[in-house]
Length: 304
Image 1: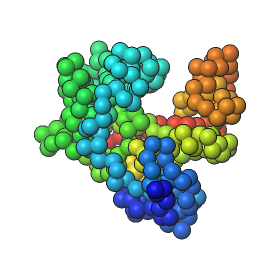
Image 2 (image 1 turned 90 degrees about the vertical axis):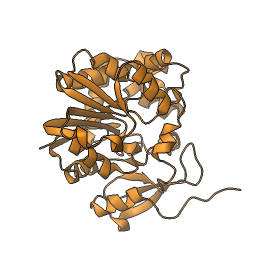
Image 3 (image 1 turned 135 degrees about the vertical axis):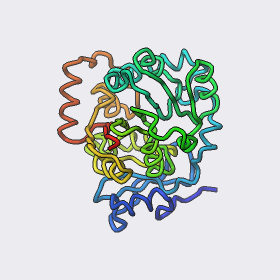
Image 4 (image 1 turned 60 degrees about the vertical axis):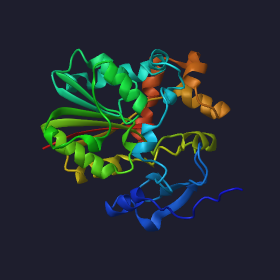
């Protein structure tokens, strides 16, 4: 029996977006009928803000992530193979945050494989991680990392404990995003920085190119909300952070977009190597940044 998608969102995240003034109920429209991996969930968009969110969040909980098997996110059977697949992102991110991690007590939220932890452990004063996925958490503990199962498990004894916090493609997975940010605010020392990288609702493949093949691929039950610059800024401000900057970053190069437009499929950055030219990619990324249509947003803020 086919499950029809809901006609209106029924989600605490939707209610939170409205209460924060990010989303206007009158501007919310049904945007896409389903997600790629689960029936009965549809995608909504606020036409005023551009924020995209799912019809529900009830399918995602801490226990859901706890049970996720091994290196399933990376389609790999072991850590080494999965690290190889994540090499480019891990190294790029490590270089971006190295100056913020150096000689600091660092907390990384949603560490997964821990590739970035391996790269920056030599420069940090201390490395701490949050990883709800049991298999990954046990693996990281076996590598002698300090690992917590959830943001909520950071107790009062860790108040003001950390000098830098990072979240790479984690914030969009959180069923309680505002409370999670407030919890992180409590464990950061005054003057500490937080770095958040998320997918962008304004991605050119969604906006300018309006590509149905990409929407069918990218809308996923675990991505509860796709943010804009303003929505991400508003969340950080509401959680008590200051000195907030949000900028666009293009994660996937021109070759990736060309393949989407040609074939309606991912992987163009590997399958069209003849279009992998640094100057060309930088120029294209600059165009997307000027249009505010990058695939990624990066926010940096400070705990006053």
